[in-house]
Length: 337
Image 1 (cartoon, rainbow, N blue to C red):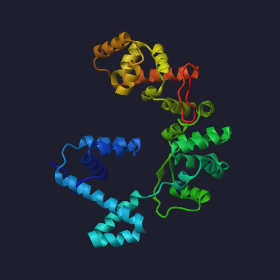
Image 2 (image 1 turned 90 degrees about the vertical axis):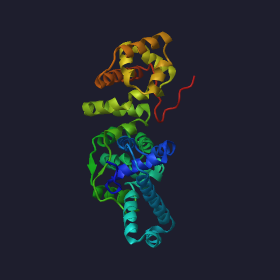
Image 3 (image 1 turned 135 degrees about the horizontal axis):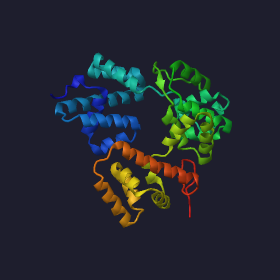
Image 4 (image 1 turned 45 degrees about the vertical axis):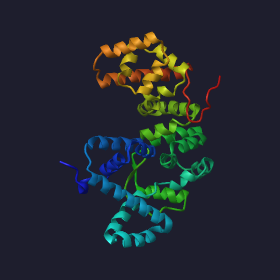
């Protein structure tokens, strides 16, 4: 049974839009989406097997209308857009488009802070409680949040990252209260619902862009206060795919410390970029041995592959801890010969 336009969800419509626009344009659009959004849309795209020309036309027309109304709003505001659209498509369609656009234009909490210099923002929040600072940083881009975290007193850094990592949901009333305190200009349209912020990944994203000294201090302090949470954060600090970011000498050092069987298992379900990064830094004989092992082992459970990849990640962490290799982080300078 074919797709029915009126039954399509928003995600399905976006997936059809991306399919209709083609791979090149769609990839440019996806560069501006979060990993979670990309994952969700990828799933939707794989579900859609056949899209009729009629469905494609309706979806393209709908998003064209949304782009048009957004242009009208930017030119003269909501009232101007409403007046123009009612003449063009009628009051009912105009109301529907305006409702959808309003939802898409909701400004994120602390939107004003994204345009403020890190030093200026630090001046606004440095004397607030760790909980307040954590809420503000969790809504900022990781790079900006990491810069501010580095500038906080060391005794506050761990408390802030701990609160970000364990943060669940914050009521909009409390967020508004903090916004009013930091910036008197609030957006007129704010989603009156509980919004998710912070969380483990937010803490990891921020720590990934701070300097090594700050990261090390925070993790060491966190291990003393909450070993379980510290371990969860540390496990996510360097993922297997990040091997492609290591310099050749470091990759060769990791290969030397890793059992051939572990390498073969880990590469059984690895991205081509990771495979190439490792194969390009080993002898032809070793590469052939690993390829042979990968072929002979046949199908392997994903759990075994992930365990092998985690072993390699642990080796990377251990070598870095011992000063044998270096991982370039957000604010560290690149190594020179």
